[in-house]
Amino acid sequence: MSKKDVTSAYSASVSDKQNLAGLDKHISPRGWNYGKPSLIENVRSEALRVKTFVITGGDSGIGRVAAVMFVQEGCKGITIIYLPRPTTRFDFDFCGGPRRREEYQSLARGAGVNFVSGDLMEEDDCKTAVKSHQKKFGILNVLVNDASKQIICKNSRKLILGMSKLAFPHLKCCSSIISMTSVTSYNGSAGIADHSSIKGAIVSFR
Image 1 (cartoon, rainbow, N blue to C red):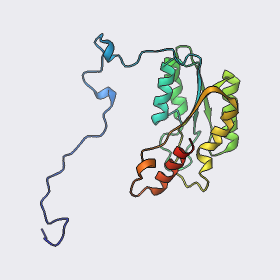
Image 2 (tube, rainbow, N blue to C red):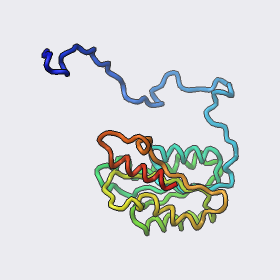
Image 3 (tube, rainbow, N blue to C red):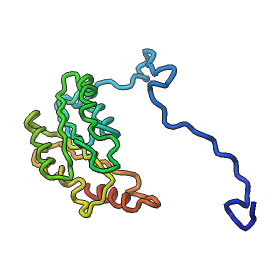
Image 4 (cartoon, rainbow, N blue to C red):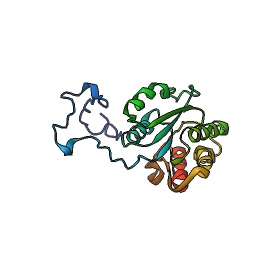
């Protein structure tokens, strides 16, 4: 131990070894509501029964959870847009759409589920996705911009404006565009200034 080296001048406690995030299938006992209303996970409110949604990146992560909740709430229809194949080493959950089709349809309870594969960095794919949704459901109430990739993009307008500008003409009164961002857009984070600035641009898009 050297008193000149601040990193070793003082003793430090041994770090605890922690497990990674748990999986539902490993939880014991399994979750149950025991007949108590306060413990029921989700009660369908029918508030979305006439609404249709387009969710980019709805096959994995936050987008998937949002899609599942919309379907459980009884939405009229939902279109999931997902990547058809890996394009960079960061695409760890590509082609999730086909795997999720059964899951969504089992929860749908009458809602229509539409899957569209495409690269949202390509305007033609964005157009195809919007047209597919309109053809199947005839109306669009909510666009959720959730898809993201860790790539170099010289023009930040491509990130969310592509889908938004194509969906906008179909959005009627009381419709919404929801764009996912991050807390780093407000405070920034060391080492990811580019990520923080792009997320800040998404906030400013409001």
